[in-house]
Length: 429
Image 1 (cartoon, rainbow, N blue to C red):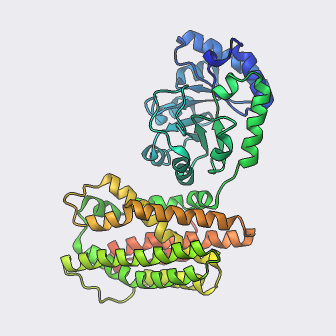
Image 2 (tube, one colour):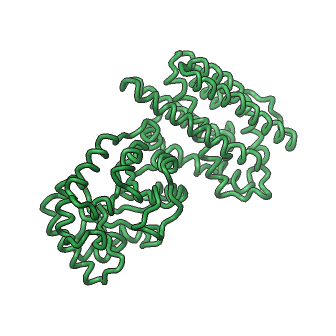
């Protein structure tokens, strides 16, 4: 619950909060944008007296000084408030700190921080907050939830009409203002909301695997290959080594993509994967040919230990005939490439970048939309299978993600180093 005395129909703050907690609220945020510091502290102390005996955390909106004064359980800060590092230093390691994110860039930056949760704001436009960014909408929320490494709370337009759809995206909870404070019967309204939240709460397979693989993904973004590609300074010989190995890898990958399409039970899924295979093969082939000719690359090389190992991992999963394993092992090549492409697209200068075509191939909207559709498919599949199958899907995805890291690592370092780390996930999760 996020408080708003102006919407409480003349009832006291304590009364509203007591009724909300009785109905199922699990955390209360005291938001007082216009209160003087002394009044804000007094309100905080009054709510602490109500909530502490009930074991319900009190979060102070924006004001770290007020949180310290009343010994609240934590704070919720926005993008223009005190920096997270300063708030953590002042509050110590044991207090809760939530952070609002207003777009995907905010969310990816939040992934680098040790916040306790993020508030995705706003999902819908709402009259209780008029100083917010463009609404995420359900599709934007779904994408944000999928990529967040922290628990997610949806904010903005949360009520009994929207809560089910919002929770179905996989977010961990909702933050509610007027649907509680302005309800005629606060306890009943809150109970209804809590029942909707509990009935629709879920964490998707993609959420779980993205969080599990985050260390690998962060290491990929930190590779010198990616940094140099982004700013256009990557040595042509290094890029040539990458393209030569990618030529070997992609030949096998797209053959297996067609094989994966044949495993589909649903005709529309089969059509999607056939289209993905055909369009992807043609697009990447055209991009490769352009760059190979432009820079006179020699692609007549032997398969590296990394390329060989990666192709074998995928081939073994395809040969199993198990569509769940096959898609899990092939997914990183779509998902990670797309996310890396989007990352580079936002940070690079394309104008004079010699690798502009590569960046645009993986960061474009069509590729992003296709990748997101595949994520929806594998999430739906994951609901059908037992725990043993999930564990093997996890292993295959994570091993493939590690090979994605190794692929770029090899491109940069060649045979000058060992890639034995691809044999085990130990230390990578």
